[in-house]
Image (cartoon, rainbow over all chains, first blue to last red; front, side, top):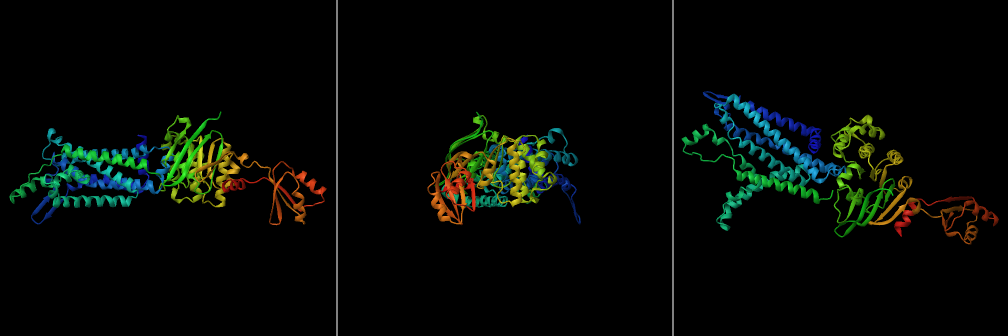
Length: 279
Length: 298
């Protein structure tokens, strides 16, 4: 708790971080504004809430996917705060003041955990309220089915943030660390493309799809699949034009394991970097 | 016997072929004021970096409190300032010190006293980034003192300050020393060390050159500064006095070093007896600076 309060103190007294955190939580709540969207173009009336996106248990899938997009807010805070520690030399000062390197890393990790838990709880509450208002099905077992999406959401955020933490400790400068994050995304795309193109020539038993799932950002995005094609409206359209989807939208233990393994690797790597480097 | 606060044992730091610190063994005992001397690049800051947990030693080891505390436990009980003050620029002085108390796990009730000591209490709600260099340095001292440390480590605390700032910091160090805190002061400003410290450690090229009491390093019999209208006659006469080690001429006067005790009165009588009258005569003890230069240049 002491370590967590140290990091929260640093974050809270930084105006930019405070602004980002507040806007993050406000944005989560404002997702409910989505429900009031009414599009009327001539005879076509479109209301998001009536499309069933707030139906239990589909809402768990939809909200966790959408709100996870906002994770970049906290990612920026992590990267900026670690970058600051290096550029202000306060990491050095913290160590001199008696924080061990492991404790320093723990302050960051506890802040990440606290944020992930708060965010997950908020998603739960917001979804419950929205579902309560708009869902067509309000039976207890239906409401609380598919809750594994919330778990996947927490893992997804934790995995992404530990990745950001590792990058920022590796690069020491916030702007470059975010740049590398973007570059990494591109690199995974290129790697996928190359594998699709050539991999079967070298190892015929292996397909690009089998390999790419092990890549960190890909593994993260596989955790919660896009929910749009699962909507009945879109399913209906697809059926009509003869392109029915048969996709597994569930949460797989396999993906969860990969992400958690990456997280462990990133934390271990961050600690290794901190320990080895002179300041 | 005094308690040993810190013991360095064969501590070394090599950067490739460069030996920044080489097999350094030092012990720091409670109640003393140590001066860590050495020219720039002699390994002072590297040594402090290692004992403060920010630089990994290449070999050797160090022990805090005779091994009863881990390094980070020990660091919570001491105070240290290195090179330049490092604080969160977006926080006020008060917020910065509160954070340090959280890290050091000490009570925040000392903050007011320490900020008053360094004269920053009135500016406690100003952000650190608005401070002048002198104020930043003084805040660093307040931060280092906030846990009432048993040992205060200061690395070049007057670096880059204007004369007034230097004077303020020096006064502060005296004040702290009088309070009985053990101090380790790294500096290349020798008069600073000479005035405050009772023990000196001299480093050169990462190797310990000398360790001992300040008086011992300057334990010589002193020298006379003499001038006369007839320097040649004076010089010829002085050559025959057995207590005199060497004579050299500097800016129209003679610098006469002694190798045995001799009071000014005694020399004056001898000169008068020989009918030599001087226009200027002072007996001086060499400054630490002179001694330091003789030590490190030999």
